[in-house]
Amino acid sequence: MHVAITGGTGLIGSHVTQALRDRGDEVTIVSRSPDGEDTLTWDPKEPGSLILPPSITHVIHLAGAPMIGQRWTDDYKQEIRESRVKGTRTVVEAINQHGNIQHVVSASAVGYYGDRGDEALTEEAPPGDDFLANVVQDWEREACTLEGSDAVANDPALLRSGVVLHPDDGALAQMLNPFLFVKPFHWGLGGRVGDGQQFFPWVHIDDQTGAILHLLDEELSGPFNTASPGVVRNETFTDALGDALNRPTKIPVPKLALKLLYGEAATVMFDSQRVIPERLKKTGYQHRYEDIYDALNDLLAD
Image 1 (cartoon, rainbow, N blue to C red):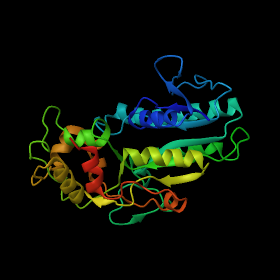
Image 2 (cartoon, one colour):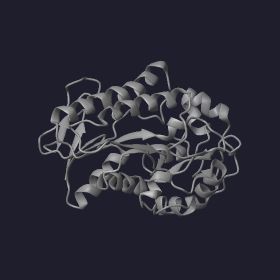
Image 3 (cartoon, one colour):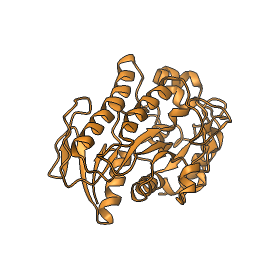
Image 4 (spheres, helix red, strand yellow):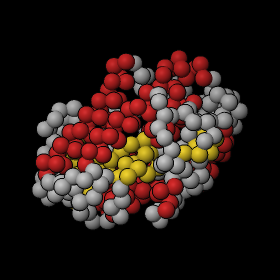
């Protein structure tokens, strides 16, 4: 297959790109910056800026402004929304113009569900009604305009990602170094966020990559939670992080400190989402990492 990947230089996209190339598939990265013959240039917010070559057979759409690590000003919240909603609209337009795509996997997020306490959240659960939940609904709605399209052989798969763990980028990197040059977990000064009772829907980068390839290869459609079935509360995640670093984790991180640093974006760390990858499991995908201790020891091994 020949796969076009938006967001192909990001944490998830770079791993998916490498996995596809390792098994012999051709990959074209869709980027805002030109970078070689295997790259297409586009502007996610500009309709008509993406033209897919005839040789493209599959599309993985992962592009979007980071949700973690940025303070959510009004302008940045608009960037989060537009990069996803308008970006997906531009991808859909390009697919319809191409007219002969086999399958599409389009990014989404467990933010769809909002803050839900201890409720078990399968893909059948209704959406939440906060900022992120509303963004994700609009984001998915754009991708779903491909349903029944003559330009695509199968309806799209929606990738409701959990918090993807990798030590060099994304949420885990922010946790290890949340205050710029201060590294509390490495120094034995880290701890749970707030009371630590919120559920934390994590997934190892290898399983995120594996799930994407599974959805692509099996041509599966509809929403799929990709979080590990071993979802844990923040206090358990924190204990596992301390175990992997061989450091104590007894000092809680106050909500106020994170709110002062990240503003409204800090709610991502407080929300509780007990996400269950029910549909993914039923399709035969088996997570390699279902135990948070095993996952973090693998990711943080010296």
